[in-house]
Image (cartoon, each protein chain N blue to C red):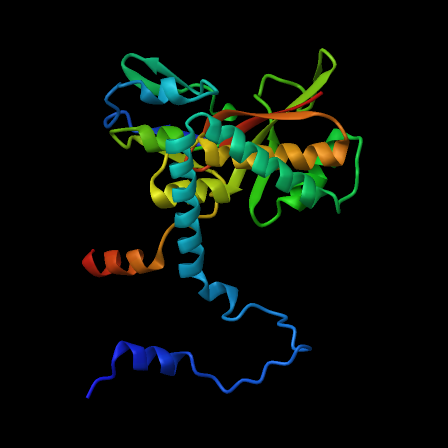
Length: 81
Length: 187
């Protein structure tokens, strides 16, 4: 099962994850997003991408293949980083 | 003295290989693992074709791409076993989509069954994990659930119609960067 952790110090309470999740996994409690129904999470990671504070962490998600990442660009980034 | 581009090209494309009619190539050359640039070129070209189609044809683009996918689905599924049972049909579908798309049946935790019969039709939610459509859209920075996603919908609908012999529909419920939720309806 997928586990979701919200960094309460980072969450700015914008509620984007609450609006975006089709399975109503999140709820706002005292201005902070709380994963109330993590058992309904299908691991689409929309909330992860949409969160402006990057306050979310998912564990146990099946990662899809990432064929769109160019190894040429990655090698250039690695040199810079 | 450096060679001109024409001289260089001529040298690159010179080969003393004798190709006979019986020489059927049995494997990719170069190996598939080295085809990254080819794959990315194809993904980008495909993405731009779809984007241009949407700009010119507007909402009609969805119908065009759906039909293209559906034809493809019917064509591919012709050679697979026909199944009446929905679960077995989905297994067949997973064989058809192997290597391009992967999916799993899905249900909210408060529901008892994956396959639901309602008003003479059957529906099931599917979570698509691997998807070459999503990969392509992300490669060129285009939004999901547009005409390219309709290609996959058409593909699945065509394949499942061919396997089950029933009319099908695939609705996009939600799209995400890692997985998408779709509702398959069989009539």
